[in-house]
Image (cartoon, rainbow, N blue to C red; front, side, top):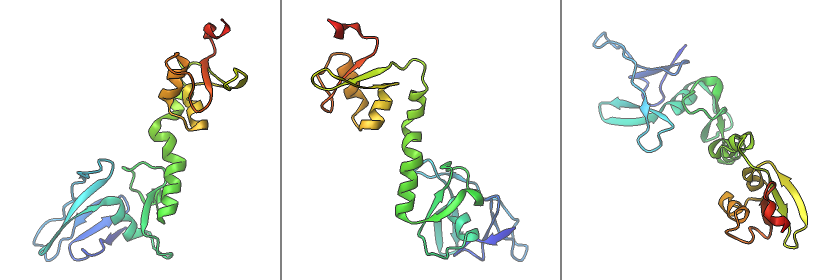
Length: 185
């Protein structure tokens, strides 16, 4: 199924497989699939160049697909990728959202994905970290520095510096590796 591209109805149409084609009016030119390329500023999004006789516009592919196929009944201004794969512009992966919903989705999904927390959590070379208060009373054990960082919001480098005796404390706690025997002295 194909639909016209909004604001360029006479010139372009978009398919469910997010191909954007030129229209063939009066058999003056052949239908052509437009080349999708990365956006010059944000390399994550695909963009195409749409032209009218008096206008040239670089348009994001996911916005073109959503405006054509997803009705905006609640007047939501933004479009979100559900699985956060920016190259998957299929209709089932796109949804209308508000700015608040988009930011919440980014925090829930992307925060761990971008910073690759899970890679560190499951890393076999990660060292177990112990948390002590300032009186050296044991509080908690963590699988890795990254897991401690996620729970307390302190930088990973600060915890590492305390574990390796470059600093005394980070976020009012003392952090040490589990197999570090120097704390017994």
